[in-house]
Image (tube, rainbow, N blue to C red):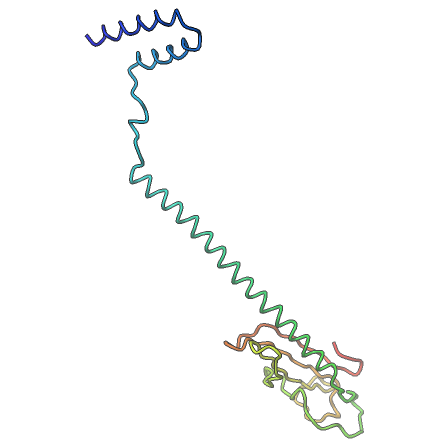
Length: 195
């Protein structure tokens, strides 16, 4: 019964198509093909997302957003470190210019004249870190300075200024809040100048 009705519809459709133009013929042909094969509308078969699809899409979205957040955090950390190093380099340059302006007595080993008083930067051994706080123009950083005296034999235990042939000035820039070393600059002062 059903098939007879469908056949009657097809015959009626074909009769009307003979009277119409070619565009409606193509439309009728596709309708006939669809109807004759008995296919259902695909949209009614899949009317939404399954829970599994939803969970997978949320997981992928979380991974993408999490990776982006990690990249942003790493970039901010890197920018903070580079800013610290840039400021510490400028402060070390500032302190080295201050030390360059000090009129040290000439460092000849055969010096006989009286040496000036005042020990700046303070004398330390080469194995010791600098401990004198030179005062920083930036309150977030500390400038620590110390000076090692070397005699002709390369010994740093000499206390007589007349025997000093080389001075090594250690400049350390540390972060004030956690005392972390950011930058270290050694300066060498000889009779020819500063290196």
